[in-house]
Amino acid sequence: MIKGSVTSFIRTLQRERVFALILTLLAILLLGAIGFSLLEPAEGPWWTRFGRAVWWGLVTLTTVGYGDVVPVTFLGRLVGVTLMVIGFLSLSLVTATVASVFIERKFRQEKGLEPIKSTQHILILGWPEEAEALLDQLLKRLPPTIPVVLINKAPPEQMDAIKEKYPPHAIFYLRGDYSREEILLKANVQGAIKAIILADRQPGETAAQVDQRTLFTALALKALHTKIRIMGELLRPENRTYLERAGAEEVLIRGQYDSSLLAGAITSPALFRIYTSLLMGDGQGLWDVEVPSRFHGRPLRELSAYLQEHHQGILIGIYTEGRTLSLEDLLSEEPSPIDDFIRRKFAETKMTHLLGRTKVECQINPPPTLTLGPHQYAVVIAPQRPSLS
Image 1 (tube, rainbow, N blue to C red):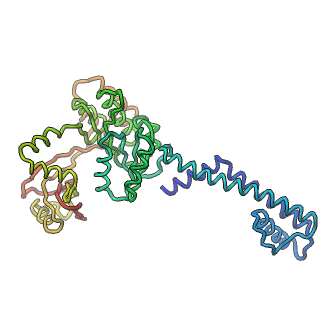
Image 2 (cartoon, rainbow, N blue to C red; image 1 turned 180 degrees about the vertical axis):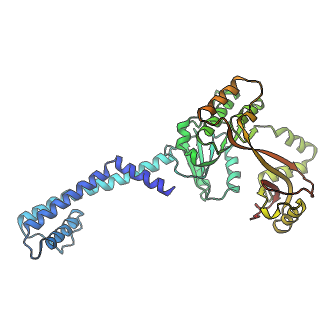
Image 3 (cartoon, rainbow, N blue to C red; image 1 turned 120 degrees about the vertical axis):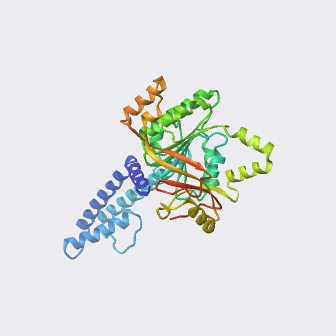
């Protein structure tokens, strides 16, 4: 990240011809030193005289003027005056140029125009009304070392307020249409670990258009970075299958849980409060932790007892990541235009075989005699994420 920022800064200086100006100053310094050593009387070998002349030219060009070496002849003083004038103007120009580079970069970052240099970051694509609540919950679970990149068309002032609200976390903003590959490349999608595509409905858009943009975005993400994990939000449940075929590991339908939560609130208000407390992370939260190798081959009850004793955790489920899914596993048996489109897009990027996705099998309230093994994760209710390493 630091290396990329330095490289970008150096390229900006090259574009502004700062290095050319510095080389010009060095040439003027050299000429002034030669003139001083030839015009001013001095004793000693020529390299000693030239060294004193270079020192004099440097302090004169930078308008410091220590006074330890001074010209005594008219021509020597004329060379000194020339260096003073050139130094004052040139150094002022260099200082102003470098300052303008910093100001321009800061301005572009605030406006969401600067390319993202971070790696191992999470992309949040879109900014509907619920996005800030999502970001708030996400940052509660993320360490500050994992950057978050927001890509949307929201006003820069709104994004600045979001970044100031969470100072410990590295939050970056990129303005633009996140379904376009050039915007995803500016977000350094190749260095990202996860992407969350939100159903960001713009004025005048239909639900079908919003879901179509989500589908195209998922295809673009997988084309640019095959190993990135994608969670996509849809407005219409009938599009779930298409988004899964496009490579999304998790698909969420907006409002799909509203009816269950409302029914729970009506029939059992206390149970509804427990639901919301778990979802909001108030005191207790839901966590998934990989089953460590020391528990492989042992019954589930031992892991459950360990979590309860050391982490005040309650094990409520187990999920297993199985074999890697192929593209054909996701496409329907009967051909359709959308399937053909998805197959063609993956073929263009030579990704027709593997998507990097794995088949996940879940068990809620598994039996205590279940034998644990590799590639398994425990779902736990606990005050904080249990550490089993």
